[in-house]
Length: 188
Image (cartoon, rainbow, N blue to C red; front, side, top):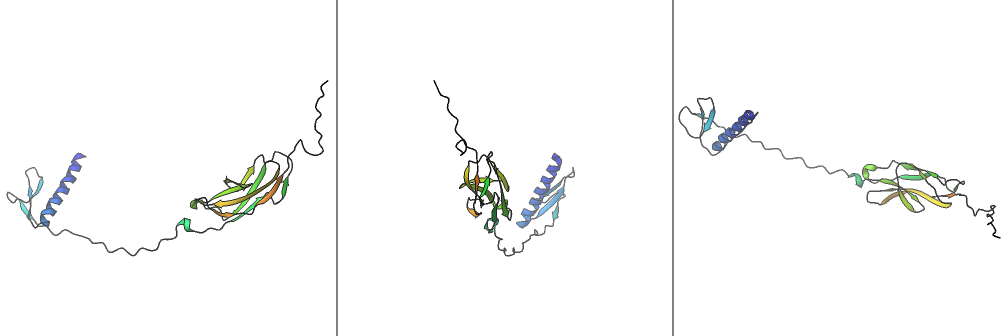
């Protein structure tokens, strides 16, 4: 392997030795030694033959064509999303239970993740990330709640939002009408 690299090195040096003097208008001689090694030199003598050196070949590339205008970058593309809360429906009441409310949203077209757009669910005015189009709100307190969905871009700017839907959660309470409080044990 070392011999091969040495051969390449000798060839490169020889080419340089031939080209440089030729460029300067000097003469180049080739001599073959007793061991068969070829030597190029600028010194005549012995069994050296003059080498005919032609002008080096050159290439000039043609000019590049005019650049075409760049297409709009993905973040420059305006998107209009149609957003809606499918469930719960407006004014829907959920019966007493654990307070787990299934929410389904509709997004058309699908959110453009390549543009760093993302969904957020806004529950009672507080945004939270939404992965997908379905989620269950866990252990919601009794009373009225609002929910909407929005699309936010990579900088946090809201680029689309649905109308808010109001729903009601009913939960058992010891203060519910029709339920008498327990009598406290009397002390004698």
